[in-house]
Image (cartoon, rainbow, N blue to C red; front, top):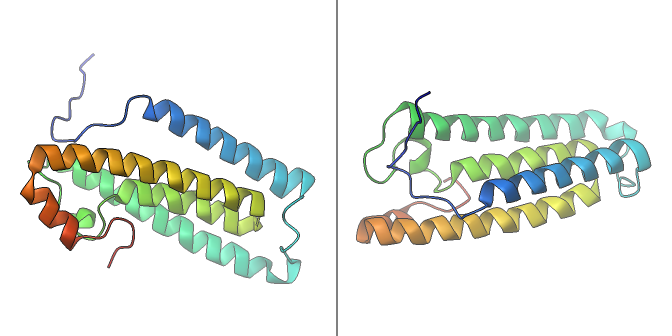
Length: 159
């Protein structure tokens, strides 16, 4: 069995995959229990606006899939040499994490679960911490090239 190596990537915070999994399980537990079973914080959800919630959530989920797919394609399908600044990385510095944020937000919007939105804020803070950690590694590795990229490309809002 061959092991894929991605020396072109900056690295990740130790135990980040475990922590991401824990947050994902917590989010889904809260979202399912609050949205479909207990409905404690879904009091703002109104059946008359079901299609609005569903449409908005679906749009956010589609954007999430785009960012996650495009970032994986840019990093893994196209062998990036040096700092990744092509494709979606030319519009936002952390497209994989942005896609993840939008995925959770899209689900929370579909059911308008305030508990899920609070959990989304916690997840956002966690991923922001991961992004800051990775940016320190990138700055150490690429120096001025990364600092220029950081000045030119926004962290979360693609413009």
